[in-house]
Every structure is written in C-alpha cells, then in structure tokens.
Length: 269
Image (cartoon, rainbow, N blue to C red; front, side, top):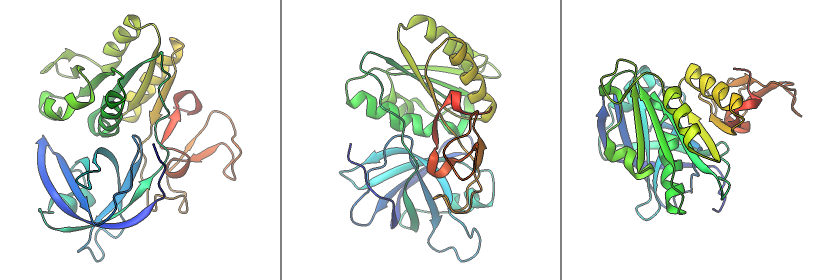
C-alpha cells in the first residue's frame, strides 16, 4: 500500500453512536483527499470549536477506512475531559485531524496464520488490520477480551475483521470465562505457523508477550501511551526497550514516531 505523509486536515462528523457501555464509534468525513492510514497507525483529533479545553488533540487508532466515501472511523471510551468533549459532538460538527501518524503493523508472512488479540479499547487497530488482511485473502483469528458482556463491541463491528471471533470476559457473562491468554494458548496449539498482533491494556499485552515468547512465536504489540504532540517533539510517550537503540534517548523509545507497533520482545514490560 502506498505510504502517505502526515497531513493537518479538517473534517466533519459523519456519524457518532454508542456501540457498547461507554464506547463510542465516531466516523469522520475528510474534506478533499483522504490520506491512507495503514493498520496500526493513529490520528490526533480535536473538536474544531475547541478554544482552550481540551487544548491538545487526542490520539486514537484508526479502526475503519472508506476511501470511496472519504471517511475513517475511531472507537473510544469516555473516560476523561478530552473524550467527554468528543462525546458531545454531533453529526455535521467540524473536527480537526492530524494524521496518519506512527508506524503500521508489519506484513504477515504468506505461510503464517495471523492471530489478533485485543482487550478493551485496544481492539480498534486490530479491526483495521483484520479487515485489511481479509481483503488480501488471509483468514485471521480475532480474540477479544472485556470486563463484562456490556463492554464488548457488537459482532457487526468485529465480524468484518474475522470469521473466527473468540470472546472472553472477566466475569463470564459472555464467551470464555477468563483471560484472552487462555484463548491465545488454545489458538497457538491449533496453528502450525501463527504470528500474533496485540493491542490493549498494558498488563494484557505483557501477558501476551510472555506467552508468545515462551512459545517461540513472533508477536507485535501496538502500545498505547499518553501523548501531547504525536510527532516526537514533546518526548512524553517514551517506553523502555530491552536493549539500547540507535537513538538520542538511549534505551528509551518514543511511541508516537518509533511505534506504536513494536516487536514485543523489544519492550521492557
């Protein structure tokens, strides 16, 4: 897919709805040319009417892209002042967008079976990835965990990314009663050449990274950190690598420009 440079754009809210408890799906139509956000990349967005609160844009992973309609989608959880301001937006409202940002997920080897493991609001980039993989003829497995059934995204949002959706809940109210790592262990036993892609809460990704490393399976993690600028200037989203990289920040790496996708073995969990 063709790489495109980051652009400062303005768009309009095309649709905006609650799709699970506290989770909202926002679709934005961009004025003019829509840059092609690859799976794993993110955007920085902010309501155009904003003056001082929130002052900074918020980073959100791209979950859906429609090049024909010049729209893209993001999913978010209403948890603080920025997302509350976003949740107040209605169809037709103007919105500022900066993107696409960050590095995408690497390509899946032709002989591998992609296993996508997501938790909570970390699922969106995996939806974009799964939909893309299916368009190339691949058949990914999608494993999704949530605290309760009400926190799970509806199947109409999950199914375009995979014909093999496996759900888990902490309280047993939907699907497997337990963690996504239980379902991951089962999937790794079933597949000859799996490769894992994960995004979600830090403890979940740490557990996935540990399980895949023990099984000698390649795993790529899309990290989520607080960001201000989104393009490497503020150095507010650093995480520690296991080994020192060729960087002015020694063993630390900026998630916004060096990531957000990393080989899971690179990260100090």
